[in-house]
Amino acid sequence: MEVVIAPPAQLARLAADAVEELLRSRPTAVLGLATGSSPLAVYDELARRHAQDGLSFARARAFMLDEYVGLAADHPERYRNVIEKEIASRVDFAPGAVQGPDGLADDVRAACAAYERAIVDAGGVDLQILGIGTDGHVAFNEPGSSLASRTRIKTLTRQTREDNARFFGGDVAQVPTHCLTQGLATIMSARHLVLLATGRGKAEAVHQLAEGPVSAMWPATVLQHHPHVTVLVDDAAASRLQLADYYRETFAAKPGWQGL
Image (cartoon, rainbow, N blue to C red; front, side):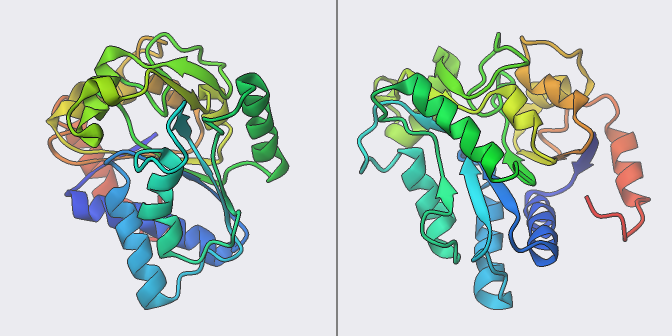
């Protein structure tokens, strides 16, 4: 696990660099897209590079991490609509190239199984963008989630619904109680995981992720077992890291050719 501590704008550029390097070397790459606040600056940077530098997504495919259950197809906070607004419509993904779990499916189990198959049939995710919740969840794998879990329905914790209420006018009652989410094992199947976190509110979760024991109580800690994880955090999110100075030293001394 590589931990990089830098200002938020630099973190966004670093994540975008990884995506750009992948797409320019393998235009048919499969990306994993996250929602929430953490990746927004990355999407802004990718959209800028598409518009100004010709970075193309035309042959790429993408899979979303999760989706609320029961939100109307035209609801602005339906994650498929959020992804369309924040990144898909701003670059040149082909029609149908971005897929997400079906939160309106009549048969949820079948929809989850179909989504897992779609990811496998696409050859798996090459680079997965991730955020982390204040309680250590990734995607919507809440504390207590099986470390071997696959795409499934989950009940959101009160903490997660309160954290997400800002997207629903501050009214936690408007936040759905259920979601469909890629499981931890599904996420771990991606070849490169790039996790972003900013702000002091994420500090304990980042500390547990990078330096704590692997535990279902902090689901993100399973990433310690992945062979290629990049954790991009600002000073505030890194404030609980015991090895923060070491992480800074190793990134400063990193060979330029190595990339993330």
